[in-house]
Length: 319
Length: 70
Image (tube, rainbow over all chains, first blue to last red; front, side, top):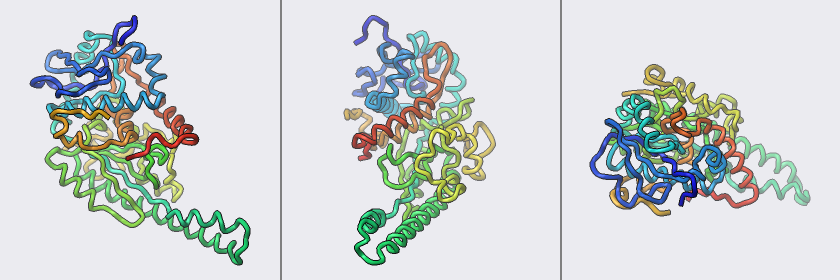
């Protein structure tokens, strides 16, 4: 597929040497089974990709192409999820690209210590995602007012309209309040049960397609053996007007970088807390770019409770 | 989607039907980040992310969301 320029090397993950090859049937971004590049006691899982897409310039443009981004992200995840069935992969950030195999080896050489630490931290663990939503008021409450004020044909419709609006607003704020309180309790308990916790930025309903306001978007690092227990714990949380959604298990993407100089995840600052502290309005569906993705580092101290705070990194809570 | 086959299908990791937005939360903000001249890695992913969000918002105004969670 490549044109004139030689292929680059897309690096999915780093593992320890493992028996055999990547699980059969797995296809990477190139459409081929990924390859292994070994250096010392580490293995990089790589894929030759065309420079036309992955050279720095084109890559930036490509990343803004949603279809391309989606396909690349799915392929990236497919390879790493497959690896997780045979070994412990340390996932690299999406679109980590080297020039050639010797670049890959240098990557392993220079990142050696970080990879070793990450392997120790992640081995035998999985990530679970937990999101909490404040449900929006029922459609009827929102739909009715549109008709009422139109002709004013019905007496008192103006007053009814106002009353309905007030009620809708109250119920919405009550939902937010409940969702926020539940988020705090849930996050505190889950953080105590998990080896580490990380907060992602609350999702915009437009992106997620999920109705309601996302007030908590968290990830937890949990021992494989305790996965079911953890999931059950989450399922136990429910409340009127509040939705709790569990995703996973994931390869521990959100925890691959903790303890490094980089912030672990781009979590919005204390999403759970944020929802409430800035009053009901704090639960804005879209905090926007100004919501300081890097503020994630500040979060765990607040959220992770007694076990957080010290140690390797802002999010690192090692058991 | 062509789901991974083989041993993977037996794994709990493969059963999930992942929402793209959840995946992107992790892939654009998680993972080990390497920088330096040996890689061409994008260091400023947050910028991409922001642009992406803006893009998606604008897409949403005109087109039924391609991101429906199924």
